[in-house]
Length: 311
Image (cartoon, rainbow, N blue to C red; front, top):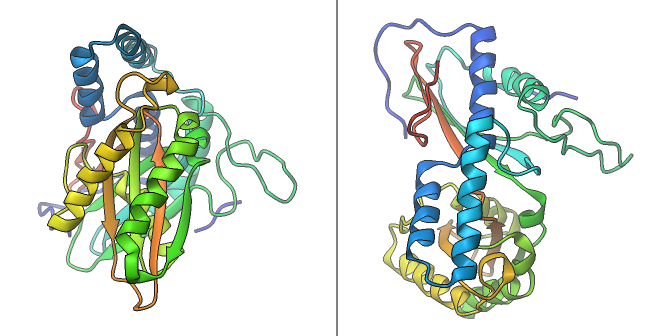
């Protein structure tokens, strides 16, 4: 059931053919499913090293062992390989402009068999599992067109069901928007965070409508661990929420020890004069996101993963 501010890379255009592009996308999907990006792996190692509580330290040790085993065997880190979200920046001068939409869906079908990925796309009308992670509006794909560019940047986020269940949005009146946002997030994590496989990564969106806020919350999970919003007010809110959420003492895997939340990121848009919408997206400790860059001269990069040979 298929549907259809980067700078220029320069250099001679020797673009990849469709078959090679599909092969590289399958590899990219496999890398995202079987490895954690460097920044996520770094924070988990730091937590394990710094942790004094023996229970929390043991959990981190098991997590890191799980990561090593997945890399060694080339198998998914988690049996729930999630719903694929693709965020694509498209240079309009890129030679891949006409190929990417169909190749992404073909690559998901192939990766489901070859990695393998668990089939997670279910038709909500028939309750039938579609078998290949391709269905109506799945994989979810968002495009951003860049007029003065010849590059393509593909970001993939694999969003598992357990940490997606607590996702929610709400629209407040703007008078006390930030205060109500803080309490909304703290209450939601307090009630549902224990079931989302903590320690968690929290994405929050602020916008004009719940739809905008929800999508910004998902995009917030794409930011590098430890990064702060460029707006100082928002950056301070990120720090405040990180502190408040860890004061809940949910702890690693809900045991009440170790940190409950490893980072909080907030993205925002302009809002309507009468609305202050908030979206919340939680992600478990297995934050599976990757970037694939395609240059017009045939070069390909996976910049979030050290030690991975693209070809």
